[in-house]
Image 1 (tube, rainbow, N blue to C red):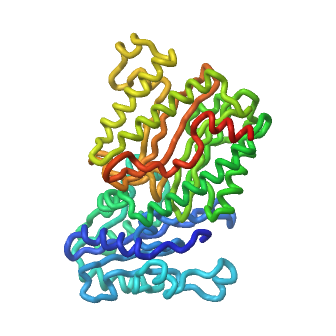
Image 2 (image 1 turned 60 degrees about the vertical axis):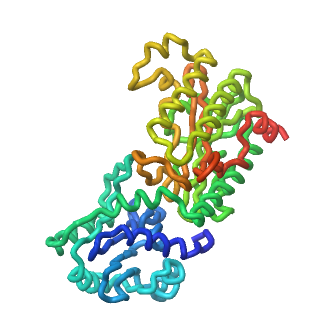
Image 3 (image 1 turned 60 degrees about the horizontal axis):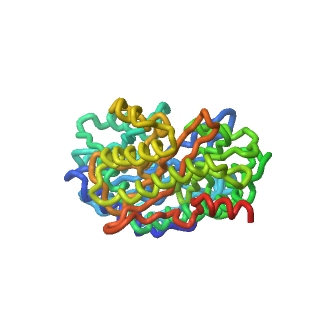
Amino acid sequence: MKYHQIDRNLFIKNRKNFTEKMQPKSLAVFNSNDVYPIGADSTMPFQQARDLFYLSGVDQDKSILVLFPDAPSDKHKEMLFLTETNDHIAVWEGEKLTKERAEEVSGVKNVFWLKDFEKVFFEVMTQCDTVYFNTNEHYRANVETETREARFIKWCKEQFPAHRVAKSNPILQRLRSVKDPIELDLMQKACDITEKAFRRVLKFVKPGVWEYEIEAEYWHEMIRNRSKGFAYTPIIASGSNANVLHYVENNQQCKEGELILLDTGAEYANYASDLSRTIPVSGRYTKRQKEVYNAVNRVKNDATKMLVPGADWAEYHKEVGKLMTSELLGLGLLDKADVQNEDPDWPAYKKYFMHGTSHNIGLDTHDYGLLYEPMKANMVFTVEPGIYLPDEGFGIRLEDDVVIQEKGEPFNMMGNIPIEADEIEEIMNS
């Protein structure tokens, strides 16, 4: 891994918090992700299953974590199962975790080789009543591929049909939504890398550059700062491309007078950042572009102040809608009749701002979080209003990542990243 080793106390605390929520005489199993094939002998870069990483810090494939807090034997209370490393593997793939190194990373003292899994697992299953399965229940999940986790669940149900079944996900949704100080430090690192990359781009952009050239500048700066790169597929959308919310082709030339919407956050140690900025190709906003830009920025600033402990997710979005409606009236994009006659299920402002304002962020860009429960301190949310104007040939989105504080306004993890229109112009023309 490129990143510095994470303090294993994070994973020790995470396991403790999880096991305290488990039923008596139960165990929980967490599997790594697969290495997914492309074709021939090619594979996609490995990405660790976030729940396994959250609980262990192990960042390699073919890994299993078993938690059994009520196990009769101490050696079975926490167990890691890993691929046995050897000289051949070290030469062809690089050294895998040894048992000693796995304990250093995770704090799990009992590490077994994967070849012994079925034997050990049979023993502990005879001693428990309930097994926790780890399924993906994120509200935006759309899984078409059978995962390693899914194959394990199918196998386990066939081998042990008499056991009760419970779900890990509701516990993890609640735990992962509130960040530990160590996690906040890792996320801040991701934001700091994003800042460096964005400042590099501000000095690079000029009329005639291509969107993919801008993407390459981001890659360069992210990787040289120990990131794997983008936390999600980057959006480099010049001109009217910005009006396609998930535009990812990044293959057009940037023309004088256009704006470029940049949705480009770095990852660090599997933790995500999520930044959006909209900059002028020529280094100066037109009067109209700046009017719309400043309106979006005002909505972002006012919306940020609403993210406080106890805030309700649905009400928050309604209030942001009111802020946006006011700005759209001021810009002449809506009139009073539009608002008076609007459909409550699709308010008038949605014509120009059709997506949500905020989402949880952490190990996943759209992270776990129980949206029907009040917000809590140390939750991290994006704030990302936008105004999209296909008829005028541009769209603007501005986005920062903020941490809810116990008291006072949220802390903006991207507070050092230029956002004011005048500052962006100054940097681009310096």
